[in-house]
Length: 105
Length: 105
DNA sequence: GCGTCATTTCGATGATAGTCGAAATGACGC
DNA sequence: GCGTCATTTCGACTATCATCGAAATGACGC
Image (cartoon, rainbow over all chains, first blue to last red; front, side, top):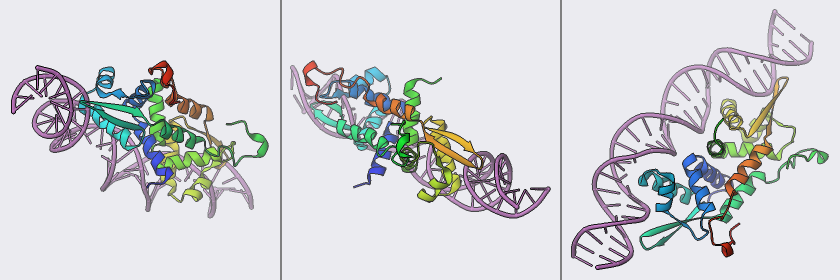
């Protein structure tokens, strides 16, 4: 089990490409039950192999979950992990500042 | 001016290394007026040149702001940009789902 | 069982990023 | 003006990543 710092850094790195960020957003904005690879391929217009590679990276980072359904593969966002990630960035914000100066968070 | 997608992807990529994520968190958690490079160097224990390189990457991504003060350089988080980034990940969440199924956000 | 369809794996290539020592900059006090 | 201190720039090396075509897998209907 990796430390939270490394895990979250890996997740942020996974999101650090325009393609993968697009993918995550489309999955987040899509059906909560999951989005099919073919639908993403149509929307994004990138080769299957490239798309598959990026999906695997997002899944390995724990941001997406996959659910097989016959010939189709549904990808779904791990909303809990995503929430933990965004919260992590703001954790203990400004705790080191002077008590009265809290205008940042 | 870059599109929001590319800008945010670059910001996420900038956060996608354990060292830079540590740096950002320490700056976020530190004095809102800014943190000095030497302080970060002491806390993190990495070489100056490496640290400087990472600080520049975070600054270029628009996540940190620098303020010179004599011989010292203060780094401060761009809280507005950071908020915009975390919000971006959740934008229009689940809008594609069935109306009654909103248990994800 | 066979063709078809959705998706993944393989393999090769070029590009980008991380690391750090040594030298350079730039400000300060004296 | 000089030594010192905080920080950045330079240069070189290695490792990791993105990309995509071609082949492989695995499920389905017939």
